[in-house]
Length: 166
Image (cartoon, rainbow, N blue to C red; front, side, top):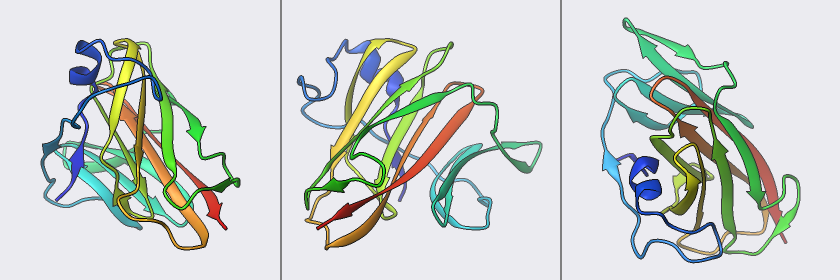
């Protein structure tokens, strides 16, 4: 099953930023799309939206009139907060990203090596928030791939970055 945190619920709760408190439990929704886009591995498919990772690149797709189209608008911005891209992290790293847009954010998610993280978060405004989570089990030594996703009602962005565990 695919789960993604609806940011609108997180922001409405008036929660603080990463590292400064947050929800006791992550809010989630579960939906699936009929035929997700490719190539690559689909991390999330919910209604007309999907997140696909292919190699070291993540893409947010939007299904319009039966056709999956990558959202390359750049309307939703994602700033990686950690682990640093190409940096070194602990075996159970805190993965975090700041998501912003000019319109209210409605959905977000984080993955490491294709596994969704239970996400917590908070927002300063409905158009800017931070999501964070950690892996359930310690990561093996070596290179790992993190993905962050965020969207408004009309646009989405997904960003991938790698880090190492030593």
